[in-house]
Length: 362
Image: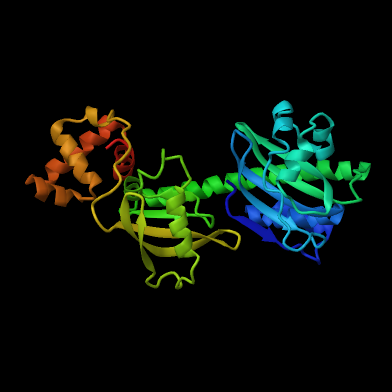
């Protein structure tokens, strides 16, 4: 399923030089997309275009950005899948660009698959630009040519070669910056004792604290799985879609989610991706009936003695060293010594790393 989609309007004052500079300077995906649309409209008879990305191994894009030109009919729907092109991509891995005519030349079902998608009328040809990573196809830019203006000239081919280079470099730059942001956010949340979580504007996971990782363990298949379950995403989207108070004022909601009832409060909105917000949320369970953690074994726990295991469990429960000492009726120095021994046995350097490691195998 394609995620939430975003349409933009072309900039009537844009020129090709400014658009090229915009693509070279873009630091987030939406700025890159706006500059790309401006450049395409200056250089091709463009009816509409779409950037499809987060593409699965089965050639299914999970997210997309759209532009529908002035020639598009009212209520027109953009092309939103790679069903037409998937067989061609399987036969031609690492291809840079191709057209609908190329696909249809040896695929009699291509036009039938296209009609089944019910795309916007007013075009009979598309150009796809494919962008590949080490693990396969990462993004496709689909440009639909206006009906009656489908011929791709030598000048068009030269432009498409330049556009592919600009877009490929821009996507790599944006991806690198996104990775750096995630690393910074995760480092900050690793030191956070509260159950805090950062989501982007489409409610895809950016990072979460160790406490949130424990609380949400039933939602994600692994720490790297960035997709919220549909029921969770729907509940959050309904809440965040309302007129929320400004960050810093009280804004919370009790949501019934799979396995638990949570109070979710908005702690802040970050603006690292253009003008689109990222949400810093705090989760608080409202009762103890939580979804059980996945049964993935206890190899780390087996390295600990029974006493160390008890101390580690209390660390996971969020207790400080003095609280653990009082709870177990031992001295603070003894607890600190036991925690140091736990660090050595599990090869971790600090408390946040310990919590993150053990929360997945508790």
